[in-house]
Amino acid sequence: MRKQVDFLVIGSGIAGLSFAIKVAKYGKVCIVTKSRMDDTATSWAQGGIAAVMYTPDSYEKHIRDTIVAGDGLCDEKIVRLTITESTERIRDLVKWGMKFDKTKTGRYDLAKEGGHSEYRVLHYKDSTGREIENTLLEQVKNHPNIEILEDFFTIDIITQHHLNVEVNRRTKDITCYGAYVLNPRTFLVDTILSKVTLIATGGAGNVYNNTTNPLIATGDGIAMVYRAKGVIENMEFIQFHPTSLYHPEEKPSFLITEALRGFGGILKTRDGKEFMHKYDSRLSLAPRDIVARAIDNEMKLSGDDYAVLDCRHLNKNELIHHFPTIYAKCLSLGIDISKDMIPVVPAVHYTCGGIKVDEYGHSSIFNLYSSGECSSTGLHGANRLASNSLLEALVFSHRAAQDAGAKFKSIPLCNEIPDWNAEGMVLNEEMILITQSMKEVQAIMSNYVGIVRSNLRLQRAFDRLELLYRETEALYNRSILTVRLCELRNLINIGYLIIKAAQNRHESRGLHYSLDYPRTVPR
Image (cartoon, rainbow, N blue to C red; front, top):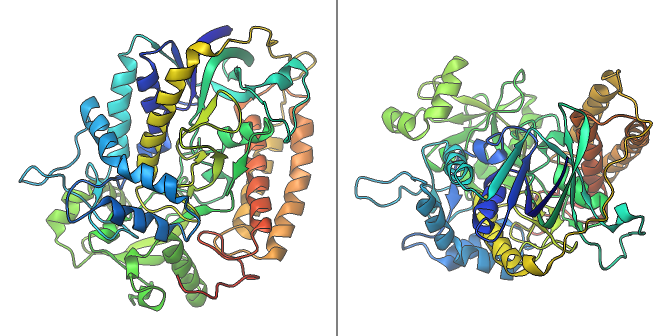
């Protein structure tokens, strides 16, 4: 298949869908998603979306909280524009049909999460992301200018490299012309040419063993742009959510939203002792990097496999009303959260770095935009403030849509792009080569590049990963492509980017903590 569109959107979470809705008035849109349309990280978001709605909250307070959480590495200009546009982007969602929880008086029922100085998190019980996803999908499916390709895997973006023009990291005019997309049912690779491409492929949590991310989060968009010689930044800042449900048999890990701590849940050791007072005056609502390291340290001191979150002192009816999904999930495992403490462990949750973009979501590659978790806008710095991610996606997809809509008519399609050449490739019949390598990548990253790092661990991880890289590239270059092979290749790229970024940061900051550079200044 060879297709031409005005706008190609890779990814179907809040970033991709909101962009598609806004550019559909300008021209033809094609959304490509590797799984079902609703199989996204957005759908898994429990807590909510942060925005300033009422006093005593203010933009300045939200800006300050974001910068403090980001440990001094946030771009203040980006923080300011994101926060000051937050209220309007919430109005967009409401206009499209999103129904956030409200109090009996009709005001939004705002929650408070770690690092926030005010109640400002809009939510729908504890399944906010699912409701947002469904709301946006309803808009997309009913729009005549939007085409959806489900279960198609994007292999690479197309640049002048595919016209046999030399491209390297010093090339100033790298241009995106669309993407090569694999149809897993036929093993054929289709060519989709576009004037504008948006990468909204989400995060990369599955480069680690233990993650709250869906299985589709394999860093595809970041890896594609890296291979195309685009600029990637801040990949050392991988956020571990402090509280995933301890249930080793289950993958991905079930998230215990931070909003439960905002509601009054208290972190304790397995024997019931509160410990956060030893680490931060904000206790269980300190920023995520601090809480995750505190839990990790307490587990190492005690030898326990998990800490606990105590909600037994909270009103049972209100607890169940606000957190029905968590209550039902825990009850299915024999844990009544109104009577039993919840076993929790940190798990990889969010990729703070990614494809470097400007204030309009434009990457270093011409005609290529990025939004959502795969992008690096400067908002999060060294650590993301809770519930700022859905907001970031809305703001930057809106800005990218405005910018792309104004430019796309002057962008020509490049019809000289050749179709994918699979001549001489053979179908790999030994899946063990892929599955075992995947396990090795995840073990390397989990053991050596986790919450606490060191120069020795990082070098060991790099050396081990280099061997897997050579083996996988050799397999890729002779094989008919499959999704799992492409995902493995992408995860190896992601692992490399995280390790090299960590090796180049000679300090402990935010989510990157090194034993070789202990932090001396309290945060």
